[in-house]
Image (cartoon, rainbow, N blue to C red; front, side, top):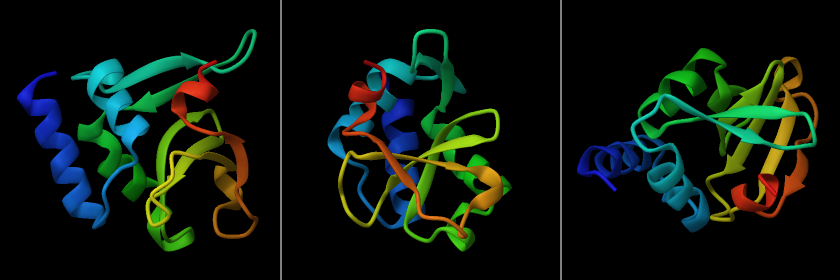
Length: 119
C-alpha cells in the first residue's frame, strides 16, 4: 500500500461524501494500486477494466453518473456496460448497467462484491 493510493481513496471519499465499502476499498489499494485501471476476468473469456482511485472521479464525470444515477459510482466498464457500487448503501454489492440506459432502467445486481465478481 502506498500513501498516494490511500490519499486518492481518501480524496475520492471526500468528493463523493461517502465511505467506500470495505472490500472495494481493499481492491483499490491492494489490486489496482497506482494503475489507471486493472483488468479483471469476469467470465470464461470476458474481462472488464476497473478504474484506479485517482481516475474514478473523472470517469464518473465523463458519463455524468451522479446526475443520471444518484448514489451510484461507476467503478469499471466493459465496452458499453458499466459496473457500479451504491455509495449511499455502504454495501459491497456490484451492479451493472448499459451506459446508454443510465437513469432509465434499474441497475442489475451482478455480484456480492468485487472479489465475487472476479470469481
